[in-house]
Length: 219
Image (tube, rainbow, N blue to C red; front, side, top):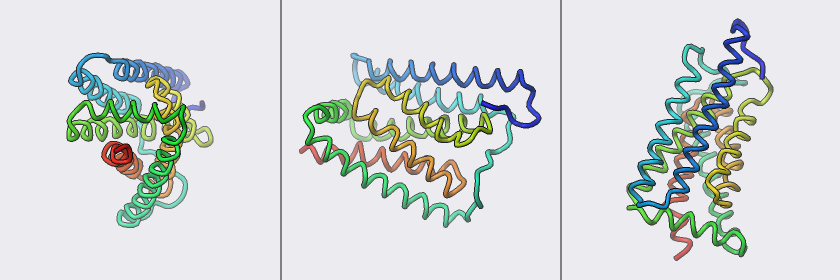
């Protein structure tokens, strides 16, 4: 990692160490969330705590730093929304096809079923709300904060590697396989729009499809 111009070396190093520590702490909280054997209320509480943690960690890492500068021109809001929507719909469609394939494979069908069963143990409205809020928190941290910590090439993709490694804590193969694909899609959305909310939109649509659409495939 390289520090930004004008930032003292000690400050840059401290910020990078803080990023590593916060990523590990969030990953530990993710492990606790998915490892919870208590009621669905405990799972929801832990998931919301995780979302709050990602938001606070993002705010901590980006405090006092200028807005992120991305390559390429910044399109108008309507154009940006159109591009983000295309990426979101394309990503959701890709995942629906992917789930159908995973359901045909004996070593992944059970993992998909477990993920859906965990979601169905909580009322749908609550599950959707938790998935959306948690996804927004992940985007704020992994697509918003981490890529702004240095000037190394493709920092956003390296942050997606960290996101994928963090997802290992869920212990669910289906979610682990989804993480790099979703991460790259969110990176693409941000790159073609120059806006963090585009990545959040992609993640939100993905969450809605996975929570509301995938269970229908298992009926």
